[in-house]
Image (cartoon, rainbow, N blue to C red):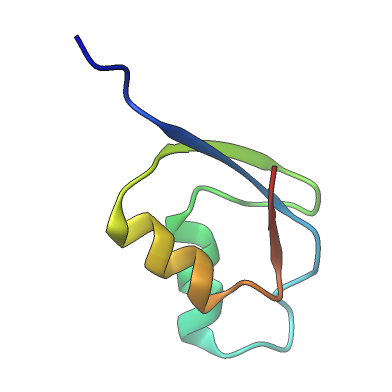
Length: 60
């Protein structure tokens, strides 16, 4: 069996003052408050979301 790959993402900048679509993307990644972390499956869709808000998040 193959083990599913995961990514750990942390919100390091506030989405206040950003575009509404970027705030929605941050929420879609499961991040709420500053320094909150989320563990997500490594898929092309999640990679695209991380790329869109790369200036707000850090991949651990």
